[in-house]
Structure formats: structure tokens, C-alpha cells
Amino acid sequence: MIIEKDYTKAQENPLIRQNFLNKIDLENAHHYVDKVNYIDNPNELSTIGNENRLVVGEAIMETTGKASGFFLRPFINLKRFKFTKPTIEVYSQAFSSHYHPQLDDFLSSLIDHEGEHARRECEVFFKIY
Image (cartoon, rainbow, N blue to C red; front, side, top):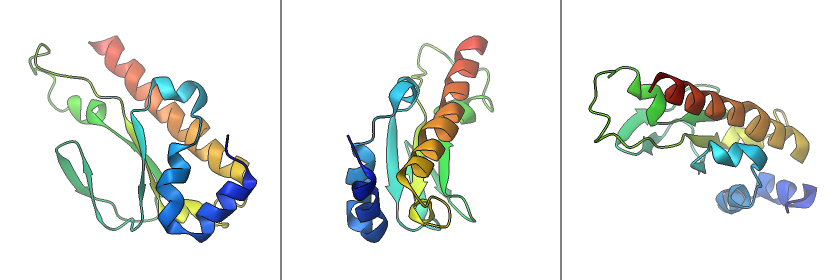
């Protein structure tokens, strides 16, 4: 279980942020999220699976995954398609006191907001296919 002190340490030290994220209990969102990745520089190239993309702007967290790109290719052979649960990417700004002054604020963004995006992505995928 993580506590406020753990969050404060992660705010102060970027080197421990991925470990901090790994310790978070995603509650019910764990059913819909493959993993949570920390990206130190939000303008760096992000690799999710075989997809490369540039993350730009003021995003502090983002839910990404194969399901969202799948709808661009609706006639794919489903026997060869392996659904991958979405990944949540957490960028350095997410640890700013401006966005998340306390642990509960951070967890709300991660679990309640991004976890909800992941849930919707999974549910939409399985309703269509």
C-alpha cells in the first residue's frame, strides 16, 4: 500500500516513479489496464507494442492501446488478432503539485479517470466484436 510519503518521494525523484507506479493498486481498473508506464520526457518517442508515436503537449496521463487503433482496420482477421488491454502512460507533469498536490488527486486521475478510459475501450471492443 502506498502512502502520501511515497507520493512525495516520487514527486521529488523521477528515478523512482516507475517503481512507485508499479506499487499502485488499480482497484477494479486492473481488469482493463495492461500496465502503467512512466515517461520522463513527454515529448519523447513513446513505443506501445509496435506503434511509435510522438507525445506532445500538456498531457499528463494518457490511455493508449491496440483497441483504439483497431477501429481503423475493421476487416482484420480476428483469428490472428490478439487484443491487448490498454496501457496508461504517466508523464512527468503528472507528478507536479500544480496538477496533483496530494496522493488522492494523483490516484483519482490515474484510477478513476484513465481507468475509466481503459474500461470503455475494452467494453467497446468486446461489444463490437
